[in-house]
Length: 548
Image 1 (cartoon, rainbow, N blue to C red):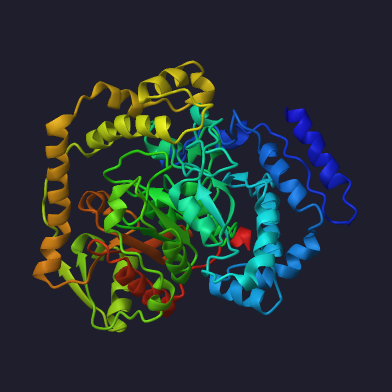
Image 2: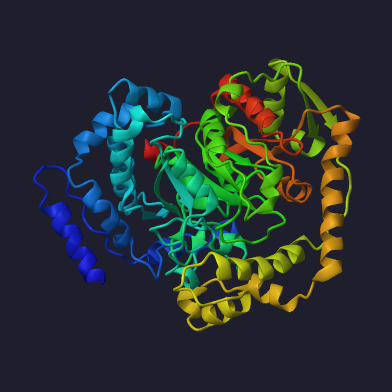
């Protein structure tokens, strides 16, 4: 099979009638020297066991890309760079409307860029693990239909999905060998994106099973995708997890937007580490049908983008009431986030901060900047609340929720039906399937939290989360609480409070750091306005140097 793919790539790239289109097939290499150099990394979880995947081949991705860019040259890529690179969605749409760009050429540009970097041994990120073989065909159809359609701003925009979100015509693996042949129907949010004209460009890598497989695994590792690397510092900086591929791909300009998922920090963490905008919505804002789960109590998909306005666009593009996920019945169906966000201001808004964060010089300077823009900074002592058995709740939920996904949403090729069966499958080839072990799977199968005790534990955690935020918010009349990256993600998860993280700056070593705004349930529009005002006033985000 690998030989067939290799020959196909040689035929497509090597025999193209136009010069400058040859991109060599990927050849796996000896990475032992790289691993040895990383063996003393200060972050023990970044002392990698491997970087390249042992079970999948980059050439499979390239085989999907090759026919779609066979007549797209380096000259084409460079000519279109000013119209696309680091541009927000409204700007790109304006270029299309002016006739300077088509959705087809836009899609080809992103595919070409993904191939260009993901096949460069010194720059690959393992951020994108699959490309939609029909992406350019779909973009061509968007070009034909554009004038007849009443379109959403997401129309014609290439979007990457985290590889735990079902997508027809592509595998949905959650990074796991157990789901390598899972070819399901679309998730509800995938259907919503398509119905509004988005082009599904491909799938992004992730921490396997959304970071709920092994306590020893680095952020960004999956058996299918290998180790995701941070474009701001390959093998130097953590990618965050579990939506690591979505974060790295957005930082490297591999799509107009990406979708991640979060249970506790899995959008906020990689967004912060990749200097992009990430929104963890209120649980219930979006459908979770057709998404490989951890916990139906806390899971939610969410947008990851390079700007707040793009985040607002993607946020509205996935909304909808899903009868298969009744929690969405209470979700606000709001289409105007993009327009409303432009009204954002910090003037007169009250922001809560804790002394812990104010001791950090970058955070303190940021708080001072917000104050200079008219915001009111209120320092308070955080409430001490119990936060026990959270991981046990996740394990109890995953045992039930993964079984339900495998029964209802996995394709017929997948016969595994439980966490226990997946664990046994992994044990059959532990070197390749679970090189970091599966301590979390083992632990959840030893626990028996269930029934009334489980529900009481969830209720207690929810009360703790709400108290942690609501007490200071009420006492000090706060509009939002400020945090750093995913520092408050666990409490926000249990409270079901939405969070928006926006680039705040960089350490002296160049590692990104983000400011996180936290508000009450279903106040996503409020968060976006705050984030937009902060972004507009600071313009902090810089593209990673080696990917410009």
